[in-house]
Image (cartoon, rainbow, N blue to C red; front, side, top):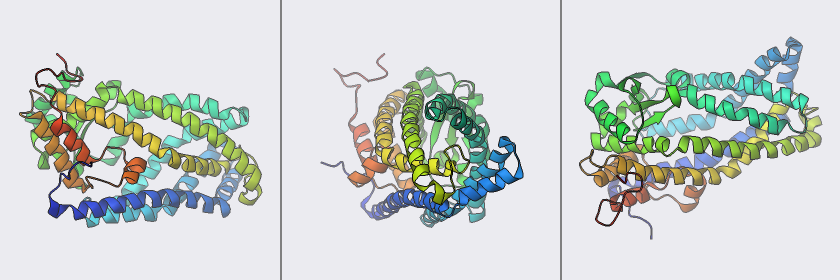
Length: 399
């Protein structure tokens, strides 16, 4: 039996409609990207970019500096209509308040950041393709693992501030800072008030969030200003406790390990797919060998296809992590929030209402695209979860 809807009946149709559009867009975006890569290869766009890069310089570092931005920006432009429609939907239903000019500037910044982050990995990839034509996928995988960890480390310090504005939380809301410090202390983390920030999300969105990000010296707490405006301190406490649970329960490192194992599989599949694709279509696409710059388009196509089909596995792992974090978050605020069960339930209510989420999505949509369990089932669980009754014990806070 499915859990009951947690939204009022009068507000159900809009979340249902928006969630249906999101689901359709998810599959359309995947098909669009794969089709775009096929068309770019069919029209020999990567081959032209390679020709321009090779004609400009004999230095491979310079060639990559020319080829990679041309390839990335062309793909981003070709797939822009899907992203633009997604923004249109968010704007139409009040989920986004960002202007079109601001949105386009963000798209440009994301493209520039992507090029900057891909440059060294792509250089490494083609070095290995030349040096180890049959084992490049294994060596590249070994080099990509520390790159994943490094990206997690620098994201809150370098990448996030490029996309949003942050300010010390202590300055604007010392009471909330003190509340979050209590939760941090209960979790055994060491995050001083100077590492707690307010993100000015209201410049772009009406949705809510609070989270812990970074690792080691870059670890920090982030609370969106929309959360403070629309949620109670108890609700924010649960949202934050949930996100903190991902850290305390080592979901970050589990995620890195999971992503690393999956990338090994994708690279192995990509190795075979690129070899087959170049043999079968290389002449038509203008890709003479696997170590040619234009072969990056073939690899991108293969990874896009395989990544789509492993999405259900990714999301099943993610839903498991999210459920554990729900338990942790509710237990973390016990004794801090007046009623942990009510705080958790109401947090899901406000999150669902502000994000226009269908509380009971289609089973197939949840299986394929759902990174979180259905919000109605989450609300029903936290409402029923009461391990402080006689004869029971909390799962994570047993003392």
